[in-house]
Every structure is written in C-alpha cells, then in structure tokens.
Image 1 (cartoon, rainbow, N blue to C red):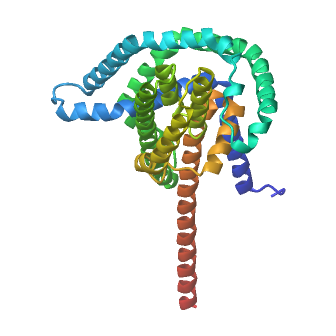
Image 2: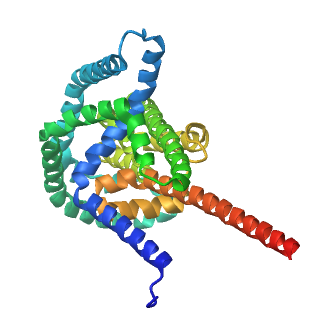
Image 3: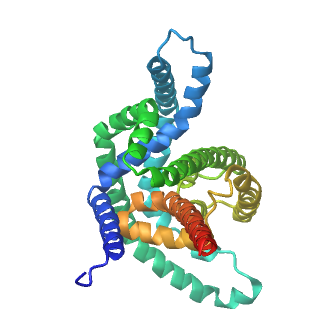
Length: 364
C-alpha cells in the first residue's frame, strides 16, 4: 500500500538502531572503557570464584565467596604494586631524564651495516643524525605529554574503584541479566540469541585468559632474558612488553621496536643476540603458545586485525585498539549464528510449503 514495504522498514529501523548504538558508544567512550575493563576483570576473576564455590558450605551465601575472592585479588595486586612499583618508577624516571642525552649520542657511527653499504656509512650517518636531532626536539615534549596523560588517568581514582565494583556486580547478577535480556525477545529469536550469548561468553573467557597468560609469559621471558643480557632498563621494558601484549599484532611489534631503540641508544653491545632472542620467542609464541591458548573461534585473520586496529584507533583511540579483536570476533559469531539460524528457518519453511503443496495435490 502506497509503496510501503514492511520488511524493508524493519531492516532500515534495525540499521538505524545499530548506528545509534555505535554513536552512543562513541560519545560515552570513557564509560564504555570502564565497563569493558570491568567485564575483562570479571572473566579473570570468575575461575577463582568457581573454585571457591566448590568448597563453599551451603549455609554461606554466594555473595560472601565472591567478596572473599575480590578481597584477596585486590590485596595481591596492592602488594605486588608496592613491591615493584618503586623500581618501575625509578627506571622510568631515569629513562625520561637521560632521554635527551641518549637521543644526541653518536649512535649512527656505531650502526651495524652490511659490507656493501660501508662506503655509504657517512651519508647514512648524516641522515640518521639529522633524524635524531629532529626527534630529540620532540622527544621530551612528547614524553611530558604522555606523562601528563597517565597522571590524568591515574588521578581519576573513581574509575579504579568502579572497575572491581562493576566486576563484582557482573559476576553476582550475570545469570539474571542474561535471562532478563532473553526474556525481552520473541520465542523464535530467543533461541538464536541464547546461542550467541553463550558463544560470546566462551569467546571472551578464552580470549581474556589467553591474553593474561601471553602477557605473563612475555613479562617473565623478557625480564629473564633482559637481565641475563644486561639490557638497560630491563624491568621497565619487560613490564611494558607484557602490557603491550594486550594490543594484538601491533603491541608486540611496538615493544620490540622500543626495546631495540632504547638498547641501541644506551650503548648495548649485544644487539644481535637481542634480535635473535626476539625472533625465537616470537616464533615460540606465535606457533606454539598462542595456538594452544587461543581456540579456533577466537582467531581472527591478520588482515582483519590490522583493519580493526586502524579503525579502532580512528574511532576510539586506545579503547578502540583494545576492543578491535574481540569486537571482530563477536561479529563473526553473530553473523555465523544468524546465517545458520535463518538458513535453517528458510529450509523448514520450504519443506512445510512443499508438504502443504503435496497434500493439496493429493486432495485434488
């Protein structure tokens, strides 16, 4: 009637709601990031909650066991921070203080070059020296700006308090929230979204725990290797590399680049051994440890990872980069489940239509 198609209108309305949702997420990026950290923290804590609940007496409420786990975890984090925070701050302060001197050092003349490039060493050294002089003028303001950003984020202590509180509520009321969401849907779509929610739950649990183990493995392996090699600022670089493991693909590459630059400008004499260590460790992690920790549903193609990181950086900065891979993997699950669901519905409809047609023909 009047050229109005109900099916098209529903699709347009759905697309509008999805666009509105992404717009709201973009506007409230800080709040979304806090919620995301709370969700990730919940997935890290939940296995310990399950372990405590196995031995929890029936007369003890479930809330008490969850609270016990959170108190222990927060206490452990506080103790570890107090033990290693001073050393980390000391190395970071020394690096920022010596940064201008390191940037103006005579590194270009000590660059290892292939034999056929030796005649061009002076030209290469002049080019690198000019780049160092340009970069040294921007290094201190950049470091100062980065430091102010970190201080500003740390000053918002309310977020640090909200993350464990939100995680506690998510673990306590997660099942009720899931059931309430499914109750809003029709009976037909409830089956589809129940499967999607379960798959996303498994995906995020495996993904978050895999990232945690990869980060810890990088922290320990880099820390031991850097200490044995005598790399300057070894603890600071190892902690930074461990944290950057939470940024897929780009994070490990950035950690390697920063470590090599700091080692080179600090006069580290065994740069080749450091490169060999990085190559061996990345092979071990990419072909042994990562496939073991990441399930098939978590894996995303490198092309999509790069595109997702670029798009995430443009849309949400650090939060967008952090969320790129889990969002892509979630969309992969949603599209896959929806395709199977609607294909099965279409086949059932066709089978019912053929059965009805055959029954009518027999009556005729």
